Length: 400
Image 1 (cartoon, rainbow, N blue to C red):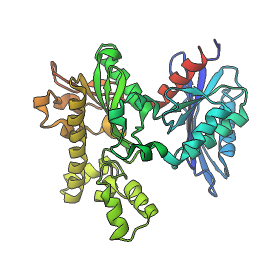
Image 2 (cartoon, rainbow, N blue to C red):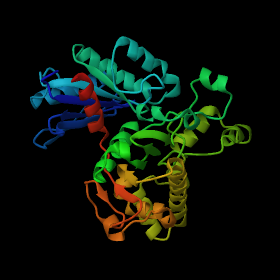
Image 3 (tube, rainbow, N blue to C red):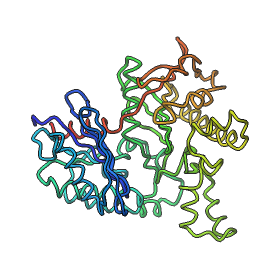
C-alpha cells in the first residue's frame, strides 16, 4: 500500500503528448497540458497550472523524450515534479492490447515486447504509445508504469460477436478479429450511467454511443461488453469525422482494379478522406448544422447518413441485449450536439426511446437524463473522462 496519491496519465501520439496529473483522493487535476508538433521545427507546449494559469511556450522538441522533459520542468515549477514522493505511478494509454491484455498491466520489458508485437494490428497508434512508455521509464525507472488498453474492456465479447466469418486458420495466423476501441470511455460511461439510474452496473444493460471525431457504439450487459462497432482497427462501424465506418469490403478491390489506387491510397481514403469530411467537406458537427440551417443539401445528406448509421446500431444492439435500460451519448458530439441525439432516437418510440426537447436542449457538464419522466428506456448524456478512468485503473493496480 502506497501513501502516494497522484497519478500522471500520458497519452502519446505520433507527434503529440497529452498529459494530466490527477489527485486520487478527490479526482482533481492539479495540472494538465499538451505538447504538439514534436519533431517539427517548432514545437508547442500548453500547460495548465494548479491555480488555473495557462502557460504556453514554443521551442524545438526533437523527440518525445525532449517533450516529456519539458513537461517535467513545467510540473516541477508548480512543485509537482516527476520526482515528487506523492506521485504513485504513471498510467499510459495504449490503444491495442490484443487478446493478451484484458486488464491494466504493470509495464515490464516482457509486457513492452508484447505491445511491440501488436504493432501490425495497430500501426498508427501502438508505436507512439511505445515511445511514450520508453521515455517515461527512462526518466523514472523506479516508478510503477501501467498500461491501460483501449481494447481491454471489449475482451469480454463472446466469440460469435468477436469473430469475422473468414477462414479460421487465416484469421488466427494474422490476429484478425473484432477488438474494439474507446474501451476506457465505454467502461467509464456505462458505469456512470448505472450510477445515474441509481443501480449497480451488474444489473443494467446499456448502449453507449461514443461520438467524437472517432465514433463507436457498444452493447454492455451487466457491466460487460458483449458487442462493439469498431473491429480489427478503429475504421469499422459508425460514420466518423474522417473515417468511413462500415463499407462493403469489395470497395477496396474495386478501387484497386478500376481506379488503380494503391493499398496505401485506399487506406488514406477510408481513414482520412471519408466520413463526414468526405461527404460534405467538414468534420465539425457545429459547422455541419450551421450549413444545414442555411439550406446546404450536401451537409444535410452527410448528417442524415451519420444519423442513419447510428439508428442501425441502436436497433442492432437492442436486439443483441434483449432488454435495454439506457441509451447513453458521450464524447464531443454526443455530449454537445442536441440535434444528433434527437435525430438518433426519432422514430424509435415503439422501442421505448424518446427525448424530452427541453431536457435535451440543456447544456451541462454533468451526467443527466434527457428522456421524458417514466420512459421505458432512459436516454442519457454522460460526459466521458478517459483520463480519470486510466488513473483509477492505474492507482487501483499499484495500490493493492
